[in-house]
Length: 221
Image (tube, rainbow, N blue to C red):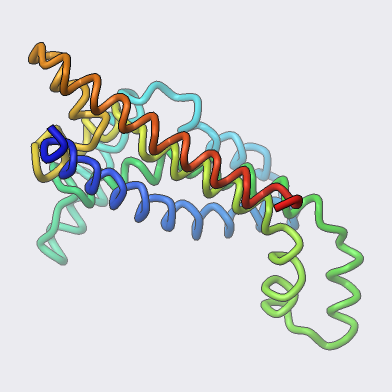
């Protein structure tokens, strides 16, 4: 039974890891821009970036199919120029999980950057620190707890992703079948023992992540 769970577990960790890194890079960038710059469409962009968090996963998955499918503008471009496709691949699972996890990083990063006193950044600029230096030496170190909290939640969310991943990457054992999809398969096949084991394993991993995040974020540790 452990051997049946090992492959989807490793794939889930790989997908969640890559998805979190992608969501972290993009989420921190957009979180900083919307926290520090005021422009006309700022709150509209905030709503668009938050949309994957509240949208039904199957609807989000359909949008992603329209985007990265063979006839989608991004999917067609990738196929024509690089001969690659995201459909029914583990990279597609990463893409879907990153989109779903992105709002958690973005909202956490934006709130953390807004909590940093701009006077601190201005003081660094008066000392001759460049804009990138201010970000990496002042703003990001002061906001790291909020950014890390968002990243940890994004990883946990990516681990449990089901609907959008199923729509984009399918449910192929050994290739795109994550733990969530393996649980679904086991229940559908009446393999209650395997389903219980996979559910327990998923719960233990998620609890371990949340406990680890709590220890990292709690200043007492």
